[in-house]
Length: 183
Image (cartoon, rainbow, N blue to C red; front, side, top):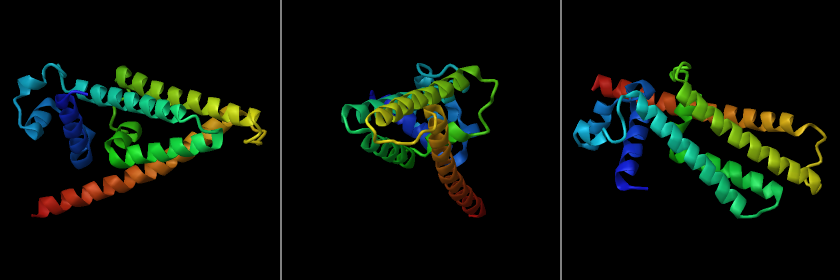
């Protein structure tokens, strides 16, 4: 990844974590990065492009994470463990991704971002289905429930867990903002 893209992602992440998704703008990023606005014009024509940019980056990271877990060639139960451990680490290190996944601030009318989020969910569902089916075939997973139901249940619980994590991060951010405003 080129250095400017890495810096952009860090600036986007910092903005989301510190001020929220609605604070994203080309002007804010250029200020945080210490560069002029025109230097970002290669990446963003308008402010809305920023959210699309970081959503695409999230999609790429999820796909890469899954590919890395698959490459380990572990048995299904270990593969699931590795997947969720790595997902947790990703969202712990880059908590701004949680805001993208769970934010009510993302306009539902923005079909491009909604499409990216849908692809991310479909990637996760497809991968989990494959692992669960493989585990059922090898006798590791003996649950007779339909794989689709299990996938929805697993993702639902992980979503709930990560949503709680995001809420905690938001409360911490809000407390920091309140303290900063008092000073």
